Amino acid sequence: MTGPVLDPRALARQLEGRQLIDGKLVASRSGQTFDVNSPATGELVGKAAAGDAADVAAAVESAAKAQVAWAKVPARQRGKLVAECGRLLDEHKEELSRLVALETGKALRTESRVEAGVLADAFHFYGGLGSELKGETVPFNPDMLTMTIREPIGVVGAIIPWNVPMMLMALKIAPALVAGNTVVVKSAEEAPFAVLRVAELMARILPPGAFNILSGMGPECGGPLVAHPKVGKITFTGSVETGKIIYRAAADKLIPVTLELGGKSPMIVMDDADLDKAVAGAISGMRFTRQGQSCTAASRMYVQKGIHDRFVTALKAKVDAMKMGDPLDETTDIGTIVSRQQYEKVNAYIATGKKEGGTAHECSAMPADAKLAKGLYVRPVIFTGLPKDSKVVREEIFGPVTAVLKFDTFEEALAAANDSEYGLAATIWTKDLKTALDGARRLQAGFVQVNQNLVVQPGLSYGGVKTSGLGKEATLEAMLEHFTTKKTVIINMA
Ligand code: NAI
Ligand code: MG
Figure 1 (cartoon, rainbow, N blue to C red):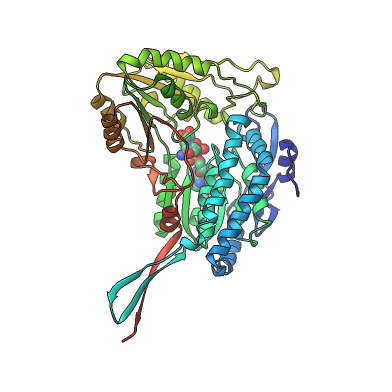
Figure 2 (cartoon, rainbow, N blue to C red):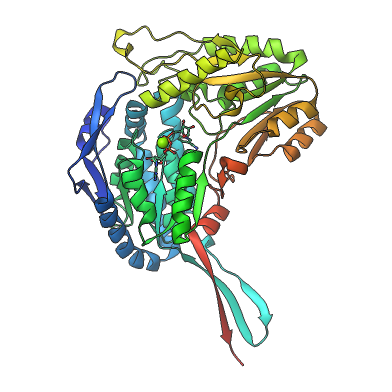
């Protein structure tokens, strides 16, 4: 396994049944595996190792041993090694894109390649921040030289989801490693292979044990990782429900956690907005190309009454023009839902929305290709006319389903947008400066954009308020706050 392997099926077979522990690809201690099927064709992508507590113990022991030496590597040198991983991952960008497209059903051109690009970018970004792990001197007493030192926490456990597995993993492991921690990741059941390949590549550069990755079920593999006495920190991205389980388990050990959870991100479109830009923003914001499988999906669109009908017509036309198809086909815009479980969940929400009195505008056409007949394709749905207490309006669907809601005044839209248990992201579309600033200040969300809808970028603080999470990611501050501890040292010189 040296150069890039561009056939994702061949690459998955090479990685079958393995996890990366202590720098080596090894089978699970129990020998158990589970099937990972392509959501587009139903074919078996590969059998993934079913890690459990015994594998967690081996990985954490390796990480704990490696951490002692890793913390002694000068911080800038650690950064250089992490940046070197970024360079190698960049060289393997195409194979990683193909593999993640195969296992998750995300379209190669519109989604998987974009993810692989941000993956490498996160390593480059954090790789340059080694010398920023600085402390302070404190003017406490002229006879006492007083300073603070940033120290690594030790072994970090990271539990990641399937929707953007490589990128979300990178935003956790790159800062953790640069800060002098070692890491054990538990990948998502639906997407174990691309991240395992990332680990295998990183192991060519990092010392054995610095970075380990396990695959397996949440309770059987993720549970023991959170509970392991030598894991000093957990960083998690996934559902609110699982986030709470992890927070409770972390409380038993009194260890810090970072939680990046769900969302129901509002988009407010005022009458004076540029219609074309707002519609383009709705397409990207709702992540239609990712089948809406995003925690920041703009899944509640509050549109002022004067522009509402034109907005719905233009949005439907644009989504209609998007091609659903084989994720690995270059002409495909929209791939599949990741798993049977998510597929059923999304379809149940569509049925609920119809029962709740909404009008379901179904977009795009199902792929014609017979080999995709068993694929987990869902036609994007734009709901109009739903009541504000509808489940489709209030709950995270994680599918290509958005609700467009008509409003009269800005105050009404703002109140509706903030009337949610979530607070991850929000956007506002207007040409009026006062409305834009007012919205930016008063929207309850961790990431607010005006007249655009970009995805998370290294260097921009990212994370939610309310039940959308605890703590921030993607910045220098995130590395310092979430992957180091601060020690005060006082030297009495009197
Ligand atoms: P999940 O939160 O259950 O899974 C995420 C990760 O947590 C996976 O690696 C899983 O194996 C692990 N996990 C599950 N139970 C665990 C436990 N008891 N202890 C330790 N680790 C555990 O999310 P799932 O089931 O994949 O999706 C359900 C819903 O969650 C989605 O429909 C969506 O609404 C939301 N979600 C949000 C994401 C985000 O980016 N914030 C990502 C994925 C899902
Ligand atoms: Mg779950």
